[in-house]
Image (tube, rainbow over all chains, first blue to last red; front, side):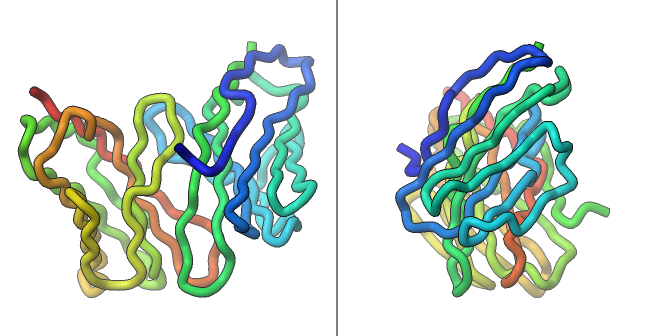
Length: 114
Length: 111
């Protein structure tokens, strides 16, 4: 079982809805990530938080709003999404610095935008 | 040219075969190399992690990194139907938080 927990596993929303994806890890990692993955494609980086501060935003549209309330939690707030935003949204975490480079992924939240 | 090249497959092998999965890359700054296994509609699962050049073995899996050739490999011995999945290589340099993925190779192990 993965140590990165994502909820919900599935989400269906309309283009006018507001919803949130949640992620939690208890491995003591200080870097957390949001990735988006379309079918038959590798994951694409959206955001990186380092020590609870946003360090990378890969030019993601403002209808996606990340939040890192503490070192264990990461949220992705969704508003006014488009059907092309339907994808698997993956949360990941890792240590920062040193020789440790592994990213650990959650199972993902499968989002469908109608 | 992509930073990381990986044959998308699909690769079909009989049960018990040795599988070789490969990636080439162009960025000589990459130091951390990972292999992920992803089952359909699931998140990527970290299989192997290697820092710099060398070999690493874990059960039926062996990861090799050849930095001089910019080439990494994952070998699976005695392949099983449960190994059927997409295998993604991923790598990054010593400072960046961003992971660069290959496109993934779809593997099918048949009975």
